[in-house]
Image 1: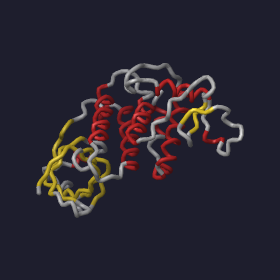
Image 2 (image 1 turned 45 degrees about the vertical axis):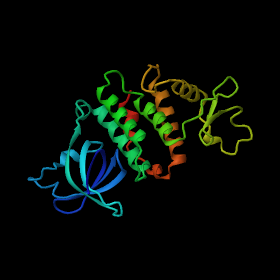
Image 3 (image 1 turned 90 degrees about the vertical axis):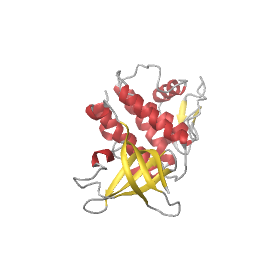
Image 4 (image 1 turned 30 degrees about the vertical axis):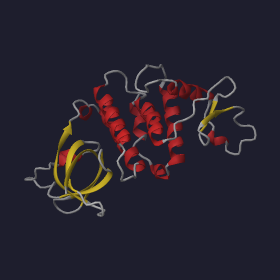
Length: 245
């Protein structure tokens, strides 16, 4: 049966001289492995520039629910990013988001809310004109919500240190704690509390320094690593420490 869905391209692997196998995250069926024949040929209608990380495409598949690899009939643009491909900061953030999604999304099931979150985030990134410096922090917090482990915002005068392993703010962070490395500093904890207090994570400006952002960003990545073993060889985030100032 031929079926069509919007999809985000996560990764491609060369299969032959002219074909690739692509990992795509679709709105209708979740994560799919798709054979795209002839895409690397100069005569192909399915041009390879549609297979860049997080390209937003409309993909038509010959769906076979029992097969591990689906076959694509056609690939065409669904939404084209107007600014991101020409902005090195936005491009770096896109590579970071792409690697995070590729290493965390594993379900071959429909999750419209997750798909729409990715759509919203990439659209905001593409259109955003003000500072991008804390966008990865905002994305990670929103992503933690979508994955079901959003940090508990129980911050108070007595609970002002965030515990990565418990996912909440705690008192007396180092006393009798078997995992003191799971406690992040008071400054980063307060900053996290401020972000968690936003009704819409992509709204509201907040003044931070480069050092403060890097510390919180690193802490949030450690928080994700607790939930996803695949992130222990994460690479794309390192460049963000240098270019997002």
